[in-house]
Length: 139
Image (cartoon, rainbow, N blue to C red; front, side, top):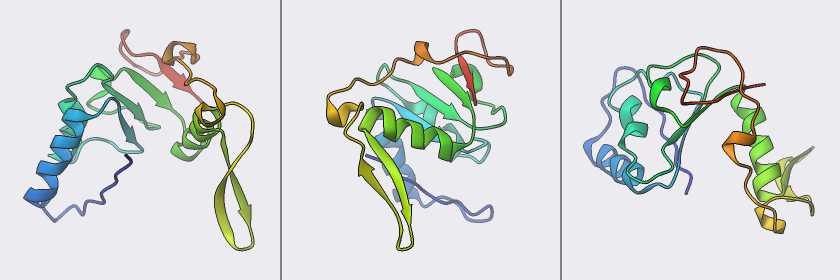
């Protein structure tokens, strides 16, 4: 399940939404923190609420205060990372046309066509100040 929330600097996160987000994070197999500094609280600490083994992955061009506990850090633009995940894991490509954009099946690779999700260890680790426990993929 993908969920997103837009926070305004001046507005507190409504209690009902915060409680729901905490519950989802605790039950998630894996949490993706996409394009965020993870500095706005309490939302910035939500990835740390994972309770299952998957932990969380940070996709952000800059370092965050939560990097030290991430399972994987990807220093690349979010749109490129998500396009690669959709292609490799789901077997989908983003098709752009005059009427807009839509995801279409490629017929090759991906879980949708019988492929397997790539292991985090198969990504090329690079520099960037990540802790030794979290590989950093740059792109």
